Image 1 (tube, rainbow, N blue to C red):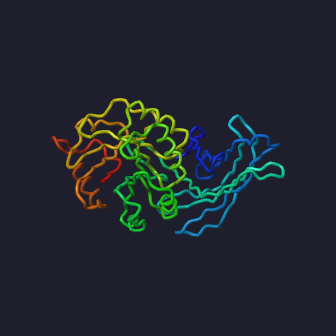
Image 2: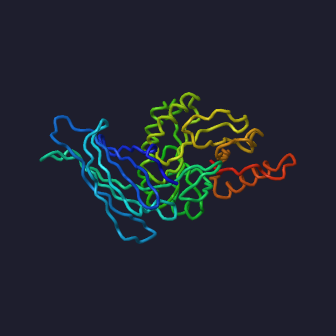
Image 3: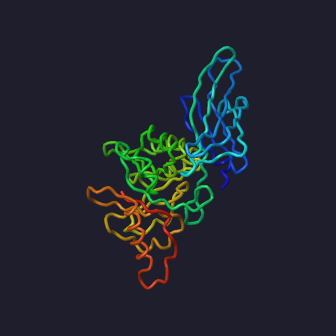
Length: 328
């Protein structure tokens, strides 16, 4: 799947510096770096390099690309690096690149930052999610960053569902190859504004491990639409999901920018029959009571129950497959 120029991901690095992941395919990938021009600086420019890939599960000959300064523009200073035969990030091969970007003026370094980025190709085809050219069916379970072990989660073949995951945990997941579904939640039961949600999505998009960002269920329909629209220029190939109540029929209008829906099912609740006619990917999200932590088996049981629901009423087969299964 090719990421078009209109899907650039603008990601905060450090104050005035930003990174944009541009068009990419099997043969090349473009990485843009943008910075605000400092006041009073004469002939400022951007320089730096992109090096890698680095991966704990494979050895690849290192490659590098130099940032080419593109000069000032309406949005600030801009530079570009072009990678040939890029190594993309997947849970099996979590390839990362090290980006060093500097904003300099004659005789005066202004700012410098180094970060690790991953080139992740994910998207939607019909009613399914895709990751690196293959259909991807996440089995997600709730995790606690304080107690969960990434290698154990990977070995179990599950995706970590985390509420507002901490930055160090995401960086570790990038390296380990653990896919994450990040859920934006209000603090202390308050209300989370659309702009604050967009800011979180922009930060999560910096991490290739975060494949899906879930908008807060507490957002009004108008706020969901506003957040999804604003996030489009920030998220790149990060997928954005909204939450819908499974016992009610689906809303006929899905806001532009929402890639998939998490259909919330409390306990043993089954979806409303109208969900059979949905036209975009649906992730069944079962929220269960009790102290036992969900695991891959919890997702498999949910999948079996929904398969039976799909065959109910004398149907010869389900009209479509669920895109994923989450248990929290």
